[in-house]
Structures are given as C-alpha cells and as structure tokens.
Image (tube, rainbow, N blue to C red; front, side, top):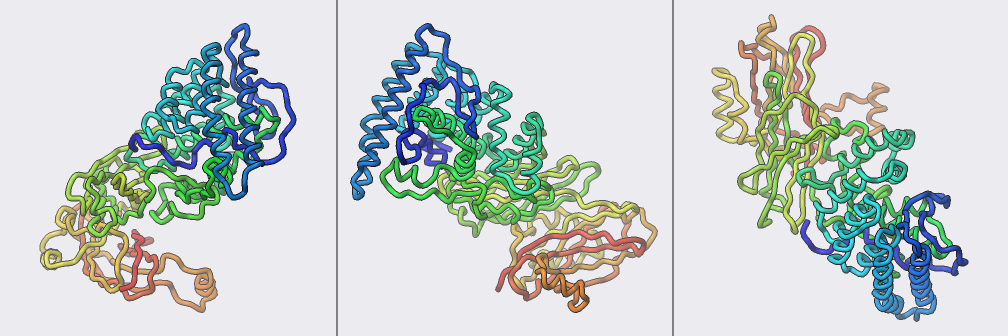
Amino acid sequence: MGPAVRRSTAMVVWLGILAVGAMSGTRALHAAHLVGAEGGAAPMLQAAPVADSTDVLEEVQVRVRDYIRDVRRSWDRRDRFDRYQPMEVVQEERPKVIQALDEAAERLPGDDWIAGHRVGMRVKHERLDEAVEVARECQASRWWCAALSGLAHHMRGDSAAAHHAFDDALEAMPRERRCEWNEHVRHLLAGGIRSAYGDADCQERDRLAEYIWWLADPFHLLPFNDRRSEHLARMVGMELRCQQRALVGEVCRTPEYFDVVTLGWPDWLWSFEWGDSRPRPLGHRFVPPHGVAMEPFEAEPWDWDLEQEARFERVHLDYDLIHPLQQQTALFRRGDSVRVVVAADMHRHVLRGAPTLDMGVVFSREPPASPVTHRVQGPPERMLLDTLLPEREYLVSVEALAEPSGAARSRFGVRLPSMSPEGLALSHPVLLDWGDALDRLADREEAEPVSLDSILDHIIGSDRFRSGREVGVFWEMYGLDGLEPEAVEVSITIREADEGRLRRLARWLGIAGPSQIQSLSWEEAVGAEAIQGRVLRLRLPDVEPGRYLLEVSVSTGDGEPMVVRRQMEISAL
C-alpha cells in the first residue's frame, strides 16, 4: 500500500475534538479505567507500580485536560469568518502536550494511558514516523502496545505491518476486552447474521468475527486485510477519545461507538480539526449484505455491491476506485477433482493502460482453511486461468491491482452442479466468442467430441453481452456412457433472472406465461465417452437490458432433467 500518509476515515481526531458545548464539571483525574459504552466503568489500562505514579499520571492528565479546554474555548471564541483560528491553537499547543507526555513516560515508562496518548497525539500531528517508533519502544501492556503499533502503521499506510501488529494485539488482549471489541463488529451487520452475532457468546463471537473479516477483506490477493485494520484503528481511536472525554467528565455511549465504527469520524470533527467543512469520504462497503454473509458460496458477483448505500458502513482505503471486473468462471468434473477455468477480458477495462497490473484468482473456504492463490501471468488485456482443485465449494475472488490507478475485482461463490441418482451430471455452461475457428470445430463435432482444451481460447472473459450477439455455448456431460438410452433430450433456454413481483403474481394467477425469452430443444445421441463436450451456436435475443439466465437441460426420459444455469447481463446494442 506504500508509505504515503493514509487519509482514511480512521483519522483519529479524538484529541481535543470533543462535543462542542458547555464545559463539564471537574472530576477526579485518573484513567486507569475506560468509561464503558453505556457509561459504566470497565477495567482497562493499568499504570506501572511506581511510588509517585499517581502524581505523575494526574499531572500529565491535567495538562491534557487543560489543552482540551483551551481548544474548546478557542472554538467558542472564534471569529465566524475565521475557521482556522482553532487550528492555530491546536498546532501551537499540541507539541507542548506531546513533550509533557514524553517527560511523563520517562518517569512512568510502563503506563498504558501515557503510552497511548504519546502515540495518539503524534498520529494527530501527522508525525507518523515518530508514532511508529514510540509504539515500537512501548513498555506498557503487551496487547495495548501492539494495538498502538497497528494504529500508527495503519495511519502511515504500512498495511502489512499494521495487519501483523493487530494480530499480536488480538492474541495478547485480555479475553473480556477482546469480547467487548468484537461486540462492536455487530454494528456493521444486518439481518440474520446480525442477530446470530448478537446472540453468540464470546468464543463463538471470535469465530464469527474472523468469518466476517474473511468476507470483508477487500483483496484476497494481498497478504493483509486493510478492512479489519481500519476497524481496529477506529477502535483504538475510540479508546483514546473516551479516555480524554473522561478527563472533562464526559462518557462515550453506544450511539457514538456505532457512528465511528460504521461510518468513521463525523463531519464536524473534520471541520473542527482542519478549519474546513470537509465531508466524509464516500468510500465503499466491504462487509457483505445479509444474504451473502449467510450463504457466501451461493453469491453472484452483483450481490457484492461495493457502492451500495453505506447505511452500515463507509470505508475509504488507499485504492480509491475499485471497479467491477467482468469474467466467466466454470467448473468441470475430473475424477475427485474439479478443473476450474476463469477468463477475464481486460482490453476494454479502465485499468488496461496501467503500467503494472497484478492479476490473480484466489479460491478460499471458511477460515481457518488456507486459500489457494493463482497469480496470472500473460498479456494484461486478458486473464485466463486453467487449474485443478479438490472438489469443494469455494469463494472466488478475481482481482486486478494497479496502484495507484485503482483496482478491480469480482467475488462470488462456486460449486459443482449436482449429480443425478443415475450418475448423470453437467458442467457449468460457458459462452464463447463465435468465429471461423468455432465454425470448423462445430462442423467436425459429429466425428469427434468437442474438448475443453479446444475452446479455452474462445471463452469470453465477461458475463455481460450485447443483445443480438452471436455466441457459442459449451458444456460437458458426464455419466452418459453408463446409461442405457441411446439418446437424451437437450434444451437451451434463456429466461429473465429478475422477475418483478407483478409478473410473478400474474404467472401464479395463470394470466401470464413463463418468463422464458428463447428456447431450443433437440435429441442428442449418446456416445461412449465418460466426458462428452458439446458446443452450440446461438444468437442472443433482442431484449430489454437486464439480467437473464441461460439454462442447459438434459433428460434421459426418466425422472427430473438435469439443469445448469449461467446468469448473465444482456445490454442494448
């Protein structure tokens, strides 16, 4: 992700940017605890056992409290035409507070409160190299030092270092604190997965949190999870913010946690810090919606809409633009394995001119199972992967990274189509770019079966097609060599994928016909081969733009036919 300063929504503006309003009353100053989400005290950070530790800690907390009040007074007295006036106070006074914290750390090197704000103040002052170094030298609680290191690295843009630091923090974190932090992941969820998460105990919540971060990881091709780091950076920021609010008699409550964890820091915080009305970045939503979270292996690429309304989440990462990536993926039976083919055409993609393009496909299953990663070498205008994998269901992430130009991805679930009790099975169908070579291939199909190898280079690397386009359809049939019938009935149908409610009601009432747009049926001779490939020439219908299903059906005459589908988008001419 590069060493550039990260301008993410985790920008920790907790310092001196508390709710603008009347001053709260003074309270006893010590912060060996953090005010809980509903205002109750929860044991948190422990001070080092030094004789004068209370005096040292209270002295530096008074200094921080006075700084907060100075900034607030500056805000209250500001010229309404001079939004930069409070910023001048911040820039002048914050380095003095940092110096006071450093001096206190020399006397109390193991105090969690002091260690936290030494890093936090430097992050806010954009002294990020210093923040990383201070976190590295931290002598406070192991988990807290690791969390501070994660924050500093994340804000500096060191994604890998931040990821590993947060790993260490979660591993060393006290069980109660980890359970509390995991509780806030629930704010990012909706529907049944939110209910299941809320009902889970601490141990099950650990597992569910890992599952959610696996799904929400922006790029499986990279060895770190920036989305999880962003969340944990926000949690560290909230810890520090709530400690400072406690200095002026204020508490952090659940709605504030919800706002910060889901959407980042609100507009008025940016406005206050920078003297400018800077809106929150729109960002993306990486945590999948309810349906995908419950059944990820059934998800289609369009179910994973990164630009959807950010009601539960808004995240802005280094890759500002994450484009959709059109592709076709299909699974073919090979004994107890599957042959997986992924094709993605990049010649018309917005990233096609990028000087460096890192492309690959990652096949993963639920953690802690290890993913299978294939980086694809070849011309940047086309990605073609042909590989063997164990027969499993997979979450597939097809990705192209071109920093700083942007990135593209398509994420979806795949599994082999089922097999009939008689042993008949079909592969996924794939659409081919029809041309003279396929004409010749179709002409000799009666003499010899069409093989997958012979059509690989013709697979269209997209699931979006123009209406009226002439394409080829390829699929494989399995188990026909063991069946008695000499022929099977085959049909290809194109139908609407997204019927509206009124049309479904009309069909149920019998006043509207089926949603099929185009259908073709014929009788197919059965060969002696265990794997029998077929290719058919087809002209896509002239229809309204939208999503449609291409269905291939094969029946032996006994029982239900075997049906496989490919969902596709048909656009206007």
